[in-house]
Image (cartoon, rainbow, N blue to C red; front, side, top):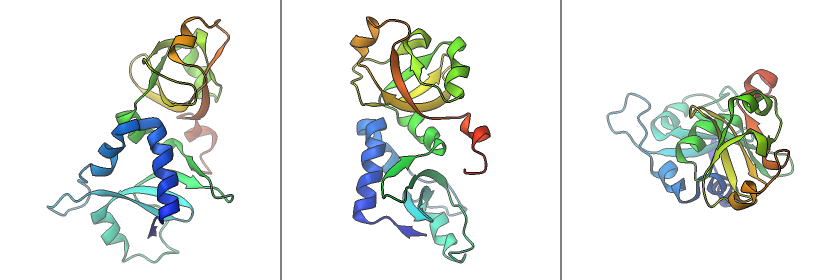
Length: 187
């Protein structure tokens, strides 16, 4: 487990900023209450086997006692670096993204299962949408009862969604909580 270098940190923060906007500082400055230390410390990002983890500093200090090849996971896996060097967010980052999301989309109950099976969000399944979404922005997808279901990339702006036909594409699927069942060996 090691700290991220400058290039890796830039890639991770750019991807997180796409979904959280200025709320990224809340993720970085959040006090950590993990571990038995009375001083809460801060959260930090660490790299282990091409996966980026969001973990409290007290746990990182304790993890130094474990051999590098024996350490499988520590904290919350936010994403992973591909062999090509690009960074992809994983579904485990949903809790962090949902708490700090800049743009949100709520699905009707009839289209929740479609999204959880890995399909994109269509206009007909849209319940609500936040204002000022532009094409290419990161959005977090919620159920109508405010349960985070996943995240994706907006295909249309908020204004375009209002005049779109019901079969028009609104959000491109990136990850959903159904992946815990579909891809349990890879997570």
